[in-house]
Image (cartoon, protein in one colour):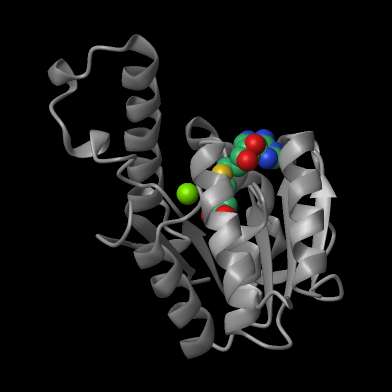
Length: 199
Ligand code: SAH
Ligand code: MG
């Protein structure tokens, strides 16, 4: 039987659930792919490939667009390599097996999509904003972190989780105070920040 692309997508989603890999939710993917089309984005730098799901969805939505995506976990990177081959997207998606915080990228992009370690968002932002084209966008996923960001901190028992939520709140502040970008946070999926470069 010839497997269809639809079957591959379903298999990727099940793999993500079985292996507890936090791929983007449908609502977030819809928002992101619509954004790519309406802004005619030609190039994306993604921080946090996981198994390649969001990169593949973005590539399908925008023919001709190129994506560079960074992942530091070997198993996930290898799974992403396999998945991208299945979709025959090797020519449009470049995967880098690295820690993004130790990676220097020379190319410039229309969009930078940050979806990696949630406590490091400020560092990712500062490291890669130099790779953004004029009038480019930086989009960050999981701004509400599974709803915890909106909760009363007293209700959060785990110390680690509390620390992470604080870091995400610091990132909210960092964005709202950043005069070089205009940021809006959308209540879709797990919360998506869109930061538009203004000068
Ligand atoms: N964008 C993916 C999901 C990414 S999950 C999708 O929606 O399909 C977040 C990924 O970021 C994890 O696989 C994790 O290993 C990776 N990650 C976290 N910190 C990183 C870093 N500093 N450099 C590279 N990858 C990182
Ligand atoms: Mg995410």
